[in-house]
Length: 266
Image (cartoon, rainbow, N blue to C red; front, top):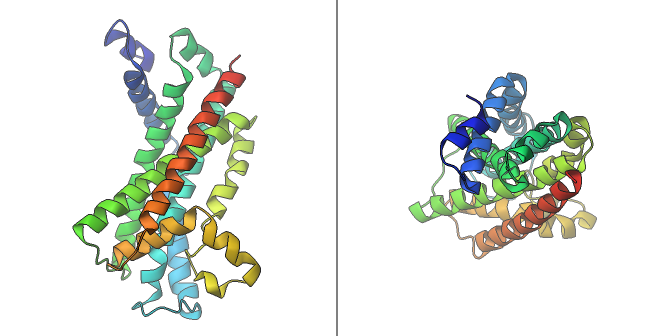
């Protein structure tokens, strides 16, 4: 039984939530079959964390009293993992637009928002699994969190908010690109953002001309929030700034995605 036949059998007028759930299940099944991309999405953040900790950690002065560099770098790697994982949404959306399946969905009265939301929901599930794997490896190499119960909830909220926001941005990129290859290339910027931030080195160790961007870009407050919360330190209003950034990015990305979908499917 096909995905859309399953929708039809659940009721004469399935709603957007039903369509979104079906689309998310479809995207997850497609992801599970693309083992190469799945392995890369899981392995690359772990490899980068190991490289930074064991190759560069001894040479990087973080200016902190953390026990080791792993305590500093893990929050940045978690956001880096979210960026890598969310980027695959752009390719998946672009493949749908190029392959003609969207016309089939439209003939079954499935609107654009559930299709895109399904991709985003699947991306969120994939990213949470990848984040959990990265976190487990971090524990094995010496990361020791000291977050309070409320701190863990805020960590989860910040991570989920950024994963969802980045996934919607990727969906918009997938609609804007004319091929899956171009979509993959356009998402490089999202994967690059954690580097000019406090993810791997303190901002004051960077060239002075980079300070302004590094301090005020959306990834930095998220990383500072995760680092402080996971280590049981005072984070001030950083989590709320991070969540405000994520909410703003989400509103813009959803609006742009819906507009682009209408343009592409005229």
